[in-house]
Image 1: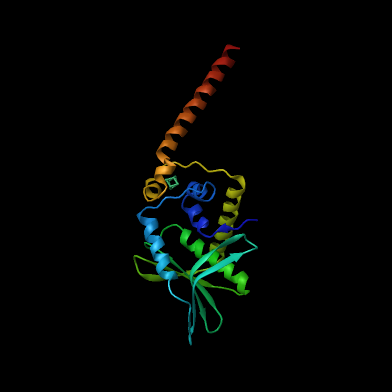
Image 2 (image 1 turned 135 degrees about the vertical axis):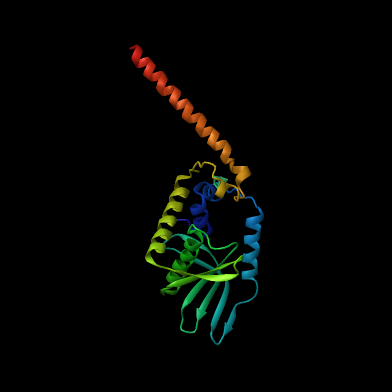
Length: 211
Ligand code: SF4
């Protein structure tokens, strides 16, 4: 099983079509939001690892899980003196209503658990707007959602199918792929397809009435 990138989980939960465009069709475009996100990751990754009396800070740590078929980079992993690992993910903006950020950091924790044969009860997300770390309990509900998302992205890769999606202003207006995706045109196409199917169905009905 080829590993899927950790970032694909977040893309899938934001919009399955966005995920397929990026990870199946290798399409990418930057906008202000993605550029801000890249900058935040770069800042977090800069500098060497730190080893102090209280523990270590590991930066840009490459992780993977053979069992789950995922791989990626943790912005920061804190290792305490008693051997506990805590992944810290850096995100632009503030805590969101969807769970995409939490799923991404949970997947990092699953990788670390497999690599270091340990249990990780919590992760942290640092949000650029609030400039605070939010604690993310890695409970069973979040772990199940993360596993289901990993399975869904593997299936998307296997099928090679890019799902259609309608225009949703809350998501599409912030999406860097909007010009390439053309979600409003998709809605029109779907409208035309529905009209065509309806016409076919009514033609068939008329024909059978004739018989
Ligand atoms: S523009 Fe909208 S439908 Fe298209 S990929 Fe982005 S979020 Fe998904």
